[in-house]
Amino acid sequence: MNNRFDKAKGYMTNAELEKAVKEFGRRCSNISRIYSIGKSVGGFPLWVIEISDKPGVEEPEPAFKFIGNVHGDEPVGRELLILLANWICDNHVKDSLARLIVENMHLHILPSMNPDGYALKRRGNANNIDLNRDFPDQFFPMNNDEEACQPETRAIMSWVRQIHFTASASLHGGALVANYPWDGTQDKRRYYYGCPDDEAFQFLASVYSHSHYNMSLSTEFQGGIINGASWYPIYGGMQDWNYIYGGCFELTLEISDDKWPSAEELPTIWEYNKMSMLNLVASLVKTGVRGRIFSSDSGRPLPGSITIKGINYTVNAGRAFADYYRLLTPGKRYEVMATMPGYKPKSTSIWLEETATADFILDPDSALEDNTPRSICDCSCDSKAKLVLLEFLLGFHVEVCFVLIVIGALLCFLLKRRQKFTLGKHKQSPKRSVVV
Image (cartoon, rainbow, N blue to C red; front, side, top):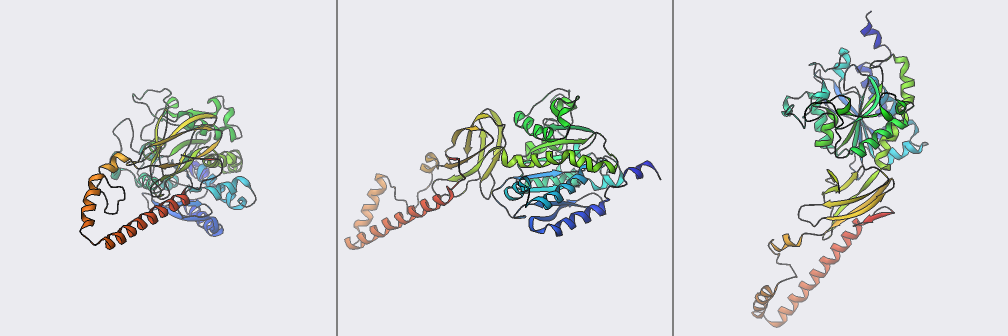
């Protein structure tokens, strides 16, 4: 019996992990669904657990994802994520934090991104590729041909495009620290290189480290957090790709000094990380500014964009409900702007204590309207159009003209009433919200 076999003792095999996921789905079917985002090189399904009071239903709520076992020889994450799912299932009725997560967001858990690497007890996948170096990079032309990327990588990219994740975290081993972007630098040298949302990422990383039993007490990493590039630069990493291409704030969490600790240590590691994982997920509800974007002329949702003055990063609203979730550092004043092609932008200033709600109602751009063909039912005609209309009406009997005018006025009145009613329905927002 060799050491490689010994260290796996007490950990779930891939078959046992699959069984645990499916058993969870049966036991907690009222707040979950089980689905696969693809398969590994070896054909093993990449199983995901979704937890929500309405699993599988698109809602105006934020989404968070956890990914474990990115590296095959770092298996602690896959064990902890199964424990997390079961803890939420067992406590969502009696525990306020678990209930907050279930009722106000959608949590997606991928216990193992690299089941083949786990089975082989090595870092890379079945093709011996490091999956955390396999994503398109912002600094260097690498992995730009998506079809040439590994199937596990492609599955993650497709997943992020399908679900509008607000934030996420991947679980690793080998250190005890919460790592945040950027992960690389333009010249490949090692130094602090923050992304546009550096302050927000420091806050999120601190939420995890300060909720942990001893991560924030680290003598190696101040406060238990670290900028990736200042630790050691990597390229083709998953967290930078999420932020740039997925609109998703991702952390890389090193949750165990030992990459593959004895299974006997798992209960202790779970207790050390449990509140960190829960508080990080709940931060989507407790932190930042959120809201929806509507059209003033029809009341329909507008899938526009949100920008913050002084931060060079855009957050897109959801396609179905035009809902947005913008993570920000509490205790500061922000100028929030909503934009949508064809509409006039609007902005508002908010003081962010913890969380705030700002709904935007955008007006159509009149300059664009003037250049568009007018409808035959348009009631706002210019003088030339009115003259043409008068000449047209004089060709008919006066009584017929009068009837036509009354009918047209009535139709315009009813149309405006319907538009106001539709807008009124969508203007409803939570208490203490701002409508702009």
